[in-house]
Amino acid sequence: MGTQLGYVIVYDLNTYELISAKYLKITSPITSLVFDGEDDTLMLGTEDGFIIQYDIYEGADTLKDLLREKEFALVQKIVDINPLLVYTEIYSLLTNFWQKSLEKAKIALQKGDKAKAMLIFGQFKHMPSKNKVIQKLIKDYTEFPKFVQFAKEGKLALAYGLANRFPIYKESATYKALEQRWKKAFAQAQKYVLDPKTAPLAKEILAPYRGMSEKTKFIQEVLSKAEIYKRFRSAIAKKEFKICSELIKQNAFLRELPEYENLMKFADSLYVKSHKFMQEGDIHSAIKILRVLQDFEEFKDEARNFMIDLEAKAKFFNALRDGDMATAFDMMAVSEDLMQTKDGVSLQQMWNSDLQRANAAAASGNIQGVKTAMQKYMQISSKYAALATIFAFTYKVQLEDALQQDVERQKIENGIKNYIVNFGLSEQIEAFYNLFKDMYPETKLNLELLKKGSFSMWRPSMIVDSILD
Image (cartoon, rainbow, N blue to C red):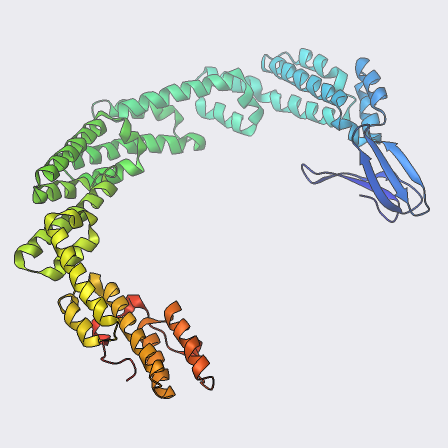
């Protein structure tokens, strides 16, 4: 950023941190900034008409010479002058050298060889930023011999306590060995806890880790598995499969047990049986099994869908047996497969025939003719939408006839209101309304202000002989 006071301010756009508030300072206000990435040149345009060029990595050659001579203290001074040098490949060599030296010094300190560590750090001691890290590291490793001793003597609480105080210890081979020991003990406890005979051994194995906050959660979890496992086995024995599914959902470890495998084999066998009964047409036996399968999370959705379909079929055939045509049509609306059955095809043919008669009557606005043709469907909820469409068409014909016959404007307006109250706004009624306005431009009727019904809310009880009344 260039400022009116002549400063160039630099930010790191990866972190949005300020790198330098006074990277450059000139005597004239800066009016423009251009950066040439090919040669890393920054060009400034000033208010007094000058163009000034800067190499943003100025000092890189000096930096290279100092690194070659390992004059790290002087390196820091060069970087302080031009902070952008830390973004160069040359400076990254210093960073890598520091990291490698740091790792070597840590190993020396872990072995108790402080002299060797200080020798490694010697070349960085005149760099303030590195010296601060060095002093803290030396101070932290003062307690490291105690940590090692505690680990050797099996005083795990004390060893882990020091590691928590000095997180740097967690990088050591000693700490990694402690963690390996813990993982082995934890895995063994997990195995033992699921067998009532060996459960006490699990508690014994985990005893040295009691009281350690970082291990408590895991210990509680593994010990609680014993109780969960008992509940799981009990639920299987009592055939409480819904409880089994809930326990499995909340406790993934149950999936790794042989009991889970056996439970899934049982569920698979039920699934096969249900399909066999469906193929044989034994709907009631299939439904009985599917009700059990719904308790298994893995089969729940599929079993429910089969249940809906089979129950619809059962209700359909029972309705046909009892002469309940309303229920039969409603079940056909739930299951498309029923429309393919012999009885379903017969019912559909009857509906198509009656619908054809109703449409013929509707074309002349004959409500009585439509009612006669559709009478047997008036109590069938799944047909309400189709009935609404037929009656809406009939009433629109009545409105069109009224317009052609020069029926008084108020009656037609009343008819439009009644139509919209019953069926809502549609393209058909809007088209008719436009014709009506052309013939009666003085009308004050506003469709948007009318109370609106809908086809989905229409019911046979709303039938009237004339929409105009």
